[in-house]
Length: 245
Length: 248
Image (cartoon, rainbow over all chains, first blue to last red; front, side, top):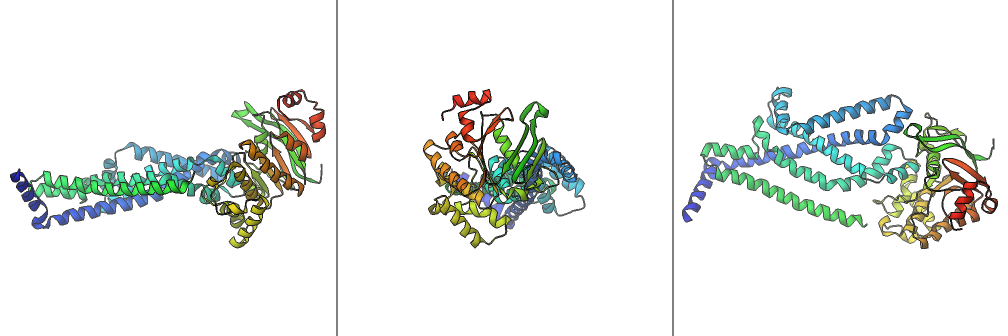
């Protein structure tokens, strides 16, 4: 047993202390966080736009069709594009999307982290869009009727009445998307980005030690996710308190 | 045509599924200023759909709704402006749960009429006094009883100074002991001369405050009369049957 501990300590030394290899881990962790946070921001912006187009079409399409005109045609085209986007993004693996982005579409961009941010951002946008849309659709139709009956137009009704309620519904799910996204970014190494996973793998390649660096990577992910899950629980508790139903 | 008419409905139709379902099947009616028009009828007869089409919450398939001289069913008309003058009260209250009572009442006047928050608050407090709920100003809707919610909903609609109030079964979702408090507010409104169109099952209310009572069935107006005549001598056989089934 003592011998085993000794060998682990030795491996730990070679993996992280020697040549300051812990710095790789730190750099990898940094990149993982950067990719995750900026991808989620892109995802939220993209998601809001797509959800707005899709739920407007679902809720207002019929009445706009009756009035006709350019705005209806634009909305219909927008809705079609959004649906196509959702189908393609959700129907293909994120690794493939990442590689297409890096080796085909953004072949001139050498900054792998930037490409990863864009690829994961677009991917996450598709999921966030559906989260937002389901949040908007979950609000009772009577709320829209009440808003419209007071004289608010559709957009004002959304901004003052529907979205504030939908955000509450959506927040836990959105936070969950963040947790999923952090783990998904572990494939960034496919395009040469040194994220947390890649850092562990690089140490493995250098030291021929597999156990220690890979377990260490797993533990780091686990700690981040546990912390985020804790925060999520606190948010959920707060939301439930605010509900007062 | 009546010059006094606030709302003139002409040839109103609302079809679903390409005409397979005729929720409103040709309705003509004039609503004069200060009138309290009570609409009764069996469930599914189209009376709620009719009420909601008056402010275009339900889009009519065809017909004219001339409100204060303008056909608001014309696609070139901005209905949002006209809706500000048509208050609506719903069966399920539809208060905004994320805002306090005061927030619910102030929202539309402040955002749409551009009055100051202070002014909006003053106005809201006046309305709250009118519905006897000034002590609930800072509460959230979830803390209120059904009757209280509906009184707040009435105050919210009144905050826009509407020219007409549309009531869509305002007491149907209430516990029996709360019906009275809501009807009392509505009676007071009627006494003050508010033009009201009320879809309801409260026959007592129809008798007491209605200027006219209308029987709706299969998407059409079957009978229309003064309350006294309407209840004493119903002519339409279906109305006779309907009245025999409901407790008055």
